[in-house]
Amino acid sequence: MVGSPDSEILLEMNRMRGAMEVRAVSAGDGLEVVFVAPANAAQSDIERLARAKLAYVRAKSRETEDTGKRPDRKGGWIA
Image (tube, rainbow, N blue to C red; front, side, top):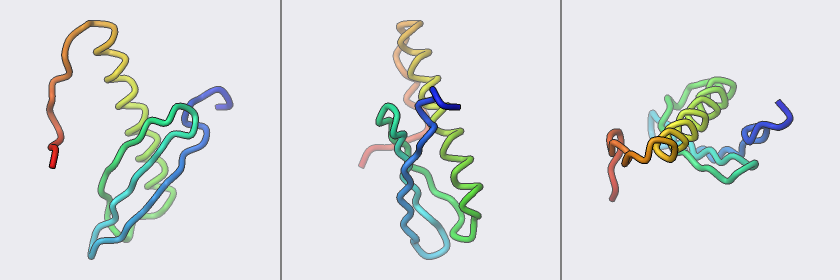
């Protein structure tokens, strides 16, 4: 998909014992997501998960803009 904001994704992976912290940034629009994957996960699986999570976050953001509702504030924490 040439016109997709996720046509190029930058990945940063940091191994922490049995897990891998993954930071994925969409080069098209700068959207960033962070998730944890198993340390032995294949890179193709990590890339697929990154694309899916970017699409999910983008859709949720678009949904809140369209409906005017506040985000549900589920699924995360701030340190």
